[in-house]
Amino acid sequence: MSTAEQPFRWGSIALPALLPTLLFSIGEGAIIPIIPIAADNLGATLAIAGLVAAVLTLGELFGNIPSGWLIARVGERPAMIGAAGLSVVGLVICVIAPNPVALSFGILFVGLSTAVFALARHAFMTSFVPPAYRARALSTLGGTFRLGYFIGPFITAAVIHFTGTASSAFWIHIIACLGCAIVLITLPDPTTTFGKVTTVRLAGKDMREGEALVEQESAGLFRTIHANRKVLSQLGLGAALIGALRASRQVILPLWAVSIGLADTNTAIIIGIAGAVDFALFYTGGQIMDRYGRLASALPSMVGLGIGHLVLAFTHDLSANAAWFIGAAMLLSVANGLGSGILMTIGADLADKSNPAPFLGAWRFTGNSGGAIAPLLIAGVTAVASIAVAAGVIGVLGLLGAGVLVRYLPRYIPRPRRE
Image (cartoon, rainbow, N blue to C red):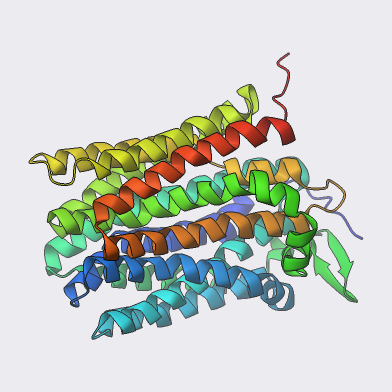
């Protein structure tokens, strides 16, 4: 094993990690609000439009399984370049899609590429940022991702205003992915930039620390889930519900805007402002967790997400439904921002310190499973009842999730004593 000796410079991660992340997240933030709108424009019912939007999170869930194996074989930077290329293929399909089915295939490719890109950039940070700086670097990475989600919808609003078509927003992500790939391709080899990095011998091969981490997270995933079934069926249920409420927020807001007849441009602007609120609170959530304990962040976050959905459920048919929509969107963003980093933090608390990777992979899969199921639930309930009922169901699940966290979080992770 070899260890980095060169002093760490924050500027050294700006171009190879933060700039590509910002570009990719701007593109993804630009398309998320218009996926249901694009499906609606292709003749989809409200339920089918929700199903098309759900395909994005399904792609992310299933993409997580082979991503670790892929990154360990080709490396972090090539994996990010490949993910950007796959995303472009999916986005081109979205642009030319003649019907909602074709649009779903394009969105699936985008979801798969998002999973690979997200895991590769995490591996990159693990490989090239010394442990003493790693938590702050990962927090900065998360903030960069949220910044992109804040900027993207405003670009979408401008593009729709000038072109008159919602599907033109897919070009924003195409340009962002191409820019991301160009940045990564033109940069020098990270090893020459960062100097010596930690290497690990795994499966008969020398790997950088980040590559080994994602390989261990993916290998034997379902075996690890079975071995940790008690905590995953208890506190892990809370994690799945956190993932569900977060994913629901991204799907139900644009779907709701379609249902109440908001203009495409207005929808993008409202979701962009909500993204700004979310972005503004990402550091606050971490401060609350460190100072007052994990439950102090997780509980208000889940209660707020649940109440935000219930507000939507009871205001769909009111004359002021647009104003209630804006208020609910802001409440959901405040709640989501207060819970920034909660899943990663709880996972790190629970993982075996001597070998955390397998459990972290199982923990992330558990949270992502909830995120994949929630949009499908929204589409299903909307099909058999209404979108208002779907919002109510998700809201109740949020409050149940808060109860799960109250019961099990103190049992597994006691509140830290304040000095």
